[in-house]
Length: 156
Image (cartoon, rainbow, N blue to C red):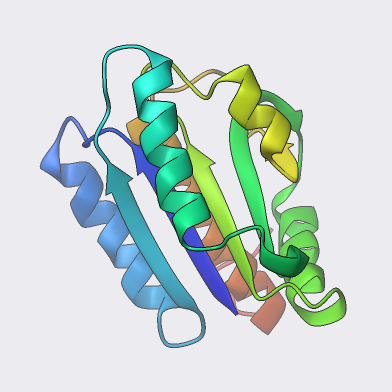
């Protein structure tokens, strides 16, 4: 089981990276996880090409064993419990070995790339900067694992 979060664009403040690393560290003993930051370019097309080169170079679509999940304001809504259930059912029941979450830069993800995603999800009804979305996603991934384990971290 592997989770990869790919973000286009360097975080505006180091504090985001520090906070994300807290959740990556907490998740790492249970799940192979990786945070990748790709350079953002002016306009969505150049960033898109770098993202696709990175994803498809690693054979992401090989045999359906990996999912691409794009973060998009019009994506599917999940509660934390439903997100946890979705994530771990994918790993346990459907033979998926890796889930790749993709966060667009200042221009978002292109329609062309979104069409290639297996799923698009939204983190909130609010639109948020990609740095904040990156942090919120990592917290929700950690929370999903906590829910799965019955940890008191998720006490809703």
